[in-house]
Amino acid sequence: MALQGNGKVFAADMQANAPALIDADVSIIAPSIYDDTYLEFLKSVVTDHNIKAIISLNDLELPLLSKHKSVLEDLRVKVIVSDPKAINIAFDKWETVNFLKKYNLKTPTTFIDLLEAKKALKKGNLSFPVVVKPRWGSASIAVDFAEDEEELNMVYKLQINKLKKSILATASKNDLDRAILIQEKIDGVEYGMDVLNDLEGNYYGSFAREKLSMRSGETDKAISVIDEKLSKIGDVIGSNLKHIGNLDCDVFFNGTEYYVLELNPRFGGGYPFSHEAGINTPAIYLDWLRGEYKVDHHNLYKAGIAFAKCDRLLNISQVL
Image (cartoon, rainbow, N blue to C red; front, side, top):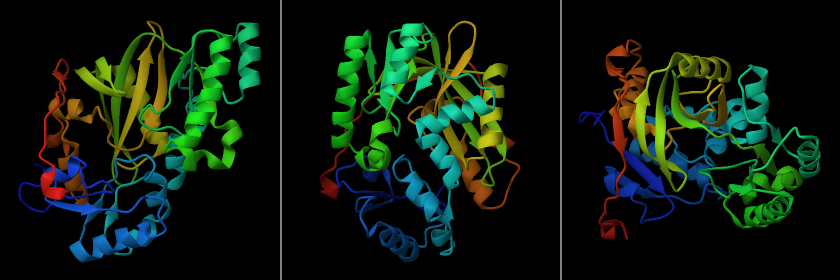
């Protein structure tokens, strides 16, 4: 809709039955991002179809696009992806913790070593239940909870085994012994927030929503909020991470303090809630791509707008 008939959306996926391919103007079957031919595939698509901008929704693809950003942009296409440093901070959850601490943002107490976590539990510096999750994670894959030490040992071993078999195996292979995090579990009100920077990495604004319910690791129901403290957190993140475009993050409020949990430098599953509450980020992207920086007319964000997701069936026979 943001294109208003002036351009087309090209969607690429390695699965021909991916629902997103149905809604695109042009659908393209892609090789795996880990395939040796992937970069050449992207370059040929850009050249053959005169693509003007590339956006990825895949956490595992972001490091690759970031690494080869200059090569792709030599083809006169804008790659709306952050630099490798920002991508690594967000994708590596241990680096995320260190980044947040550096800028005095609260984040759950986190351990990268099982023995150190057990010592903290015995000393009372950490308490059950704890969250056990991959250091390099995506879409809540393999996140577990442990209620006691016996469960912690079982879950930790299970995590290692699941990691080796999951799509995160390649990302974790270089440091498998330190690929699982043990983290304090924060209870309270959960918020999703879109932190928007411009295409040069300058902070523009934050757009938060309270999560009312979750499904399969994504926000299912939410209501938009405008909160000065949340906006300040977004400002600190955006101004110091200097990511490009939209960043999706999770924040918990335990009744006293706000804790930041995740940073995902891409559109997240909760963005549609922000969009419906009045921030039209795709339209802002298009203006920025045209060199137009007065974009406040696309920002009509209001608090108290509640939406729920619902499933729909798509006929995928046309791409099979």
